Image 1 (cartoon, helix red, strand yellow):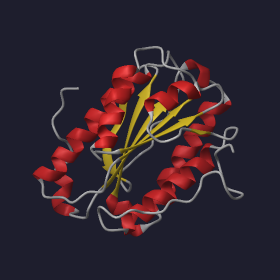
Image 2 (spheres, helix red, strand yellow; image 1 turned 60 degrees about the vertical axis):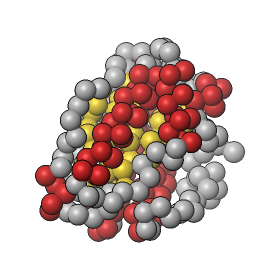
Image 3 (cartoon, one colour; image 1 turned 60 degrees about the horizontal axis):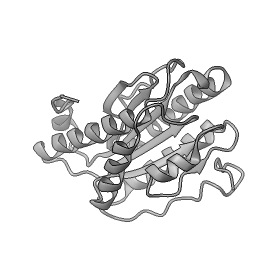
Length: 222
């Protein structure tokens, strides 16, 4: 991905530390129907909850990469400026390419922060998929393991419906989570609450996260 750092003009107007969250979203043909509809609604809820929090709206930055085919749907923007893309299912599942593109997008954003003397939190990369890769995923897995080892980012994997959880376990360092039914809205509420908690902390602090398998609003299968 040959791309220059972007969005640097906003740093002068908003010098707050940044909390970047990259969403890698599977929009392959198997997401047709209720799955893609629920994912779209979840994204809208995610944005609305972040915007409702004054500090998070300034500090949390969101970007979206969709795959099926690979596309940088939105580059990093603060939550207040972020407009969720309207997702439509198509194509196959080039998960490996999406992970590699995502790692590069995060690297470039961190480069822009450093160039503008902006403090930042450890980026999150959040993968959501309902299938298995249709390309070579091993290079992406190596990037994930390297990035986690270097604390360059935190990578989370969520499997939906018929997702190949065995492959996700070989990609992610953390245990992948299985979405309970199509509870995308609860997933994104958990994610927005997590991002808000992180944005209220000091960069580098460890922030305890609510267990996504517990409570009436839990979204992960036990």
